[in-house]
Image 1: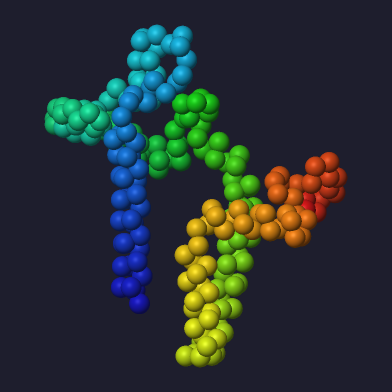
Image 2: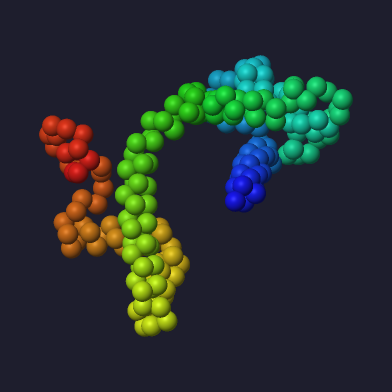
Length: 202
């Protein structure tokens, strides 16, 4: 049991490391200079260089690699602490997700502002899918190798294979036309709610 848990923890750690490294290099492979994403025609070359210094883009990506796109090799004897990758990992461990080039605001603040709405969208759907999945699994196990079992399996595979963007649009139109549900917006326009619970139910 302990070996199984340690194995799971080890693979989870390696997965996180892989995702972090992949995320870092994917944005370095993209063509163009991130500092020029600040679309202000008044910016001079000196201002762009100041942006590069501020965000650490003037540093080498890693040892021996000055930049990735286009590939430009550099010195292999620099201090690894002075590379973009080390700064990226250090900031990530401290909860610093960087600053948005477009809004000039911390990315963590932007994500936090939209976290509640994201949870409202994902939460009910996740809970419903768990309940429905467990229910279908119990029925399939109870009626194993019968038409009910095969129907539950086929229905689950069909629901899993449907494109979510298409199925979501179909549900929106069906809920609006058949049930009279609003097709957009989080709350009823002009609604007066006395509690968070009433607001959530709406």
